[in-house]
Length: 416
Image 1 (cartoon, one colour):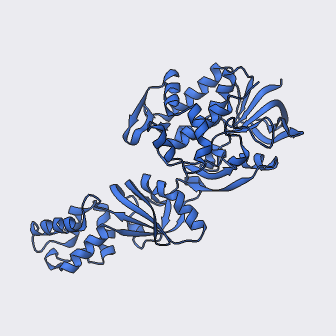
Image 2 (cartoon, one colour):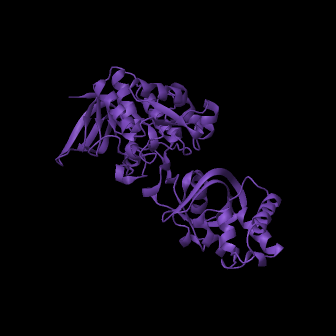
Image 3 (cartoon, one colour):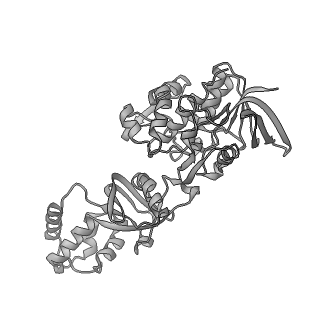
């Protein structure tokens, strides 16, 4: 049969677009190349799914890094409050955590994915799994349908009056996001803004990095410098793994860091391990700690009173003091050196983690070639885009999921 609408990709944007289009009276076919819908939703937020952020609209939009003016229309049509109402009506209990991040109360991302699938099925959407779209067909500047490869590997064609591309980006490719949508868009004349990882770990050349694997720092301050110019300040959690520097602070900084590295600029992160104390107060704290210690206690014992245990060895190497130096032997100059490093430990950034570790993709379909009031292509009638395939990305904290829901909902409002 010929469908009114074919949606490509059963992720957050695709499920929302398909269900919304069906709710508006369209016959809808949703094609997904993986064996189930919402693969990326099911692993996002460490399996808990931070589905949106409850900040007021003005504050929310400040977290959108690219094409915020374009996105504002979709957000006004279906904002974070609408997302909360939607899932609550689908029977998902939600709770708001620190930073106004919204999660399912169950702590299970599956609840969000399943609610979206139920929404589509309840509205009559036909979902075809293990179905890989290979091309979008057009005639005279108008969409006519798609070509696809079915679960048995046979090439087929399906006609439709409209096609909504919701294929995601290229982050977490194991979930099915492999850049297909960029190829579809380019094949019909769309410009693709260069894609690169965003919200991704940053690789450091710090000489002590081998000692820091597994270190998690909470409530630290951090500053991002590009060519020695301060470009971003953050506060929160910073972690170290074999992938690089991660945690919310590093992920938020990665957007600017990645672009700077691509442009071959010098990048560094300066970490304040004691942001609540100024240098004078920290020095007084160190003096008090030393005064309460035995003269024959080692420098490593002093560090254990100041920083997490895992940071003792790398910090001792950073300040260039032997860990078995007696605290009674520390000079005023050496104590001041410790203060300076605690207040500004420098991590040169040499690279960034690849797409397989990136939460989202920066770049994508040029938003100037998409009607922001409908999500329809300005080049091909009946062709729509929603979600990560567009050149829109935001900070971590539920903002990118909301971009998917808002643009997907607007794309699903297409007229008969």
